[in-house]
Image (cartoon, rainbow, N blue to C red; front, side):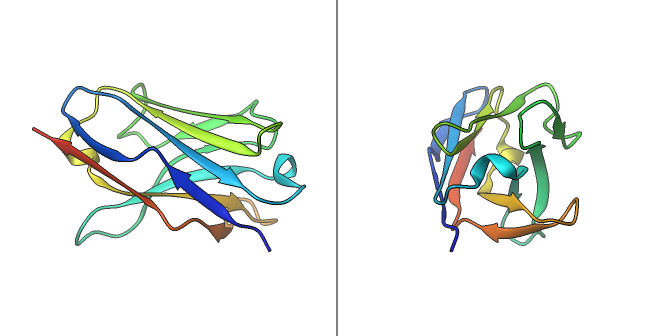
Length: 119
């Protein structure tokens, strides 16, 4: 069973930064792509960023491109989301997820961490 545990959320002023972490259990972390998603109140969950198993490829939603950076440390079974220049519209619960065998799908999800950006 794979477990994903997010941390690093909190309250920050607009323009500030946060770094989210997602620690994964299991020995096969380095074999899978990982992603970050978010869900704001009253809205559907949306894709934020993804990273390939090696870290060599990254993908971002247009809304965060140039402000957020996804990275991973396979030795620590951890994926990160560095969030800079935060905006109030970035307020959401952020989830990490493990990529499934089918590209673009995700099969395990964390419980989420709240990010609140005040104006």
